[in-house]
Length: 286
Image (cartoon, rainbow, N blue to C red; front, side, top):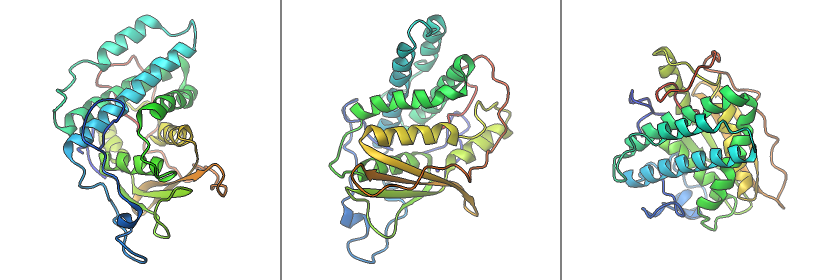
């Protein structure tokens, strides 16, 4: 998704959280404006590029809320196994040094990346990498409640993916054949900047919990699409423009979506032995 790290916890770089806090209204693109106003008109590659900084901050905060509340929900579901003392310590780290609400988006981005990494490491250390999918589905239940519905049908979850891609500075575009619609919508991320950030972090000596950011990201985006009532499908790509992916959301009563696959993903780094979580260990994975 195309930016680089600011050296403090994330790439430099959208959105609001209706249901989470008062804030700027999310930019909504009607189908005609997405395609430039008429048949055959060129479609903007990155329609959210002009998103206001305050909106970017709000989406980072919403994503942090979805992840932390989802993890709390997941630990509750495990009954007597939540490692409560460790969890309380982790929570103190997650909410340490929070920026002011009106701080620049890059500050909330830094906190999100730090906290995403801490939560991933907490889960993998105690329960194994296989539980990341369970966490993603728990997060999606929170996402279902806090992500506003804009009445665009299948286009809603695809626009959320576009806004997240914009947060990272990734290169992305909606399908050329048709604007995102109520029954089906698709988006292609032609260059995922999360890989850029991870590679920079790895070269600087950061130990990565996961071999590939796609391990968690694909689970999370698929779960979010399902939580909104649509069928997800994705395909990972790796070519001249770098790592990327294509996403579809299809109405439950629409034509079957392409089968989900990760056959073309190539890890950026080999997973290394895990260690006790710290506030600066890893870049986040999604």
